[in-house]
Image 1: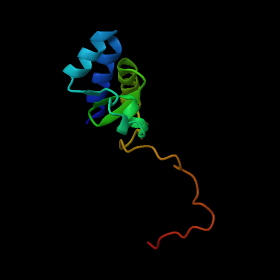
Image 2: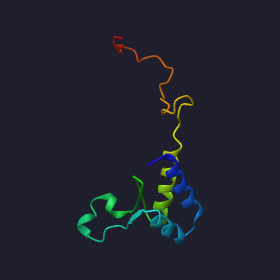
Image 3: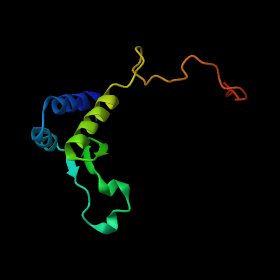
Length: 108
């Protein structure tokens, strides 16, 4: 999904409170999964938490509203990645540094 779509969804969810946050999340097409009631599933930690999934981002927390809040934070972080001003590519943390010692430069 585009960064703009994520930003819009995150802003709408951040502006809502309480149970309306759950309804808004589902209106946006999100999936909320409660913890499993089956004791045979309890050995897997992800089956003991509430999960929220929307637009390819999945988060979990102790309750549904916290899972949605975590999704909002993740969507905001995904939509605000640093990009180069000239060409829009993600900014590399090694930009402008020399190669690591002992690395071979490819032949041109």
